Amino acid sequence: MDLISLYPTWYEPTVGSGWVIALIATFHVLASHTSVGAALLFAYLSNKAYREDREDLLEFIKKYGLFLMVFTYVAGSITGPGIWYSTTVASPSGIGSLIHSFVWKWAAEWVFFVIEVVGVYMIVYLVGKVDKKTHMKITVIFGIASLATMLIIVGILSFMMTPGKEIWFEQGGFLNAFYGTNTFIQTFMRIAFMFTMTAVVGGIVVAGIKDPAFKKEMARKLGGLGIISTLTGAALFQWYLTAVPDQALLVMENRLPEYFGPSIIGVIVITITYFIVTMWQPKFVIESFAGFMAIVILVLGLWPEEVARESMRKPWVAGQYVYSNQIIGRDVPGMGIKSQLPIIEKIGILKAHPFTPDALRTVNEGNKIQAGEFITMVYCSNCHSPSKTGIRPLHRYFPEGIDQARMEKYVKGVLTTGNIAYMPKMPMLDSEIEALSAYLVLNKKGGQTAINKAIESEVNARNHTALKTSVHTTRTTANAQQEAK
Ligand code: HEC
Image 1 (cartoon, protein in one colour):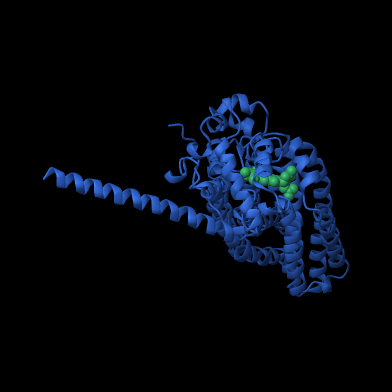
Image 2: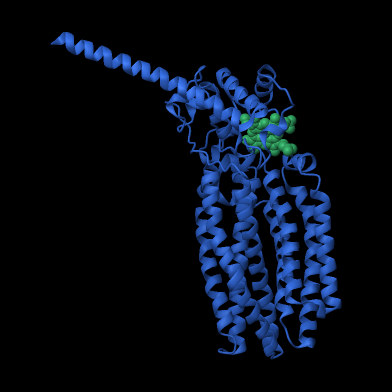
């Protein structure tokens, strides 16, 4: 039988699986970037503390380090596996493709991560217990290990947008997958924004400093760092846009929500204003204000960034060959990977999918809505929520009063052909087009209530037939037995 490698679909009706991942990932980026930036800041400060023989700088590192341990390391260590769990169920083929290309990279990253976690404890607890020079050495190792985790992960993240080099499709090879223009620019951009986060979160630690002169010094240092890194990051973002696939630019230009542009500019202005205020009047920096501003800046800045990154990759989720709906849509000779589209074109998605319930493998009058619902879950739900809420709810994209004939024409003309750049090609047999269209029309007209009712009557009718058949078989068997006697 021609089955393709697909997994059961994970569907989260309220917000959609995509947003569950985005939520976890946003927290993770916040925690991880803040820690890596802080690690480099610590290396600088500890060096200065050694050279100028200053206790107060080490005290500052200790306080900031403790804050990181309690907040970002705990949050990072919970959300990190959270990303693994959520992406594995929401996007199993996508994560599979990354593991196939990068398993040893990830192993290496975890080695550095272990050094990082041990390092942060050492840095905090050894202040005052070892001499300044030893402390500086530990801090430098900690900084290098932290930066290494980031350098490794950025290569993997940029592969999700596009493999490093085009030649990877033909030849494979993990360096071809890993290194490309996109990787380098994204690395610089993330380093810049990472320092912004470190400076913003550092404000909370600065707020707790008692000595006014030292508070002023640290507020100025962090403010300066924040302003420079924010402006550099914004400039690098413009450069980054030159290194993403054309398709991503198309989605950026046409498909990002209208609030996107203004909100990014707004966040940059708020951030820089905040840093200027802290540099100019350090006494305004009290814990509640600094904490509040950290949340505002980080959430407002990171959320649109994560949404954009998710949207720009469409229709792919990884390597420009795994579609967001988990179907492999392109041959990759270098990895021995074959597109799954020809098989689906031949036998239909219902027969090709290994987890289609037996009763739905062939569309008929008795299972149309259920089959349509199954196809929607498999093909669309990763990007469009079939319910009223969540990510790009399907019902919003169809005009009022659309009927079966018009729906079929759209599904056949647009969706099965892959004519829209940001959606996958989704081949279907005519009977499947009919089933999907019937479901989508009902979804538009009556929503979930209408669908549940239709499915209930389909199931009842099937059970009724099944009952009749089984009664019939029992009777025939009984008759046969009687006759045999
Ligand atoms: C890879 C993700 C993805 C998948 C899978 C996907 N879509 Fe889309 N679809 C999009 C994006 C992105 C848009 C643009 C949405 C926007 O601008 O808000 C879109 C837009 C649409 C539109 C609006 C038409 C237009 O011209 O823009 C319709 C209708 C639609 N999708 C239906 C579907 C149906 C039905 C399925 C499943 C059979 C599906 N999509 C699968 C990503 C996807």
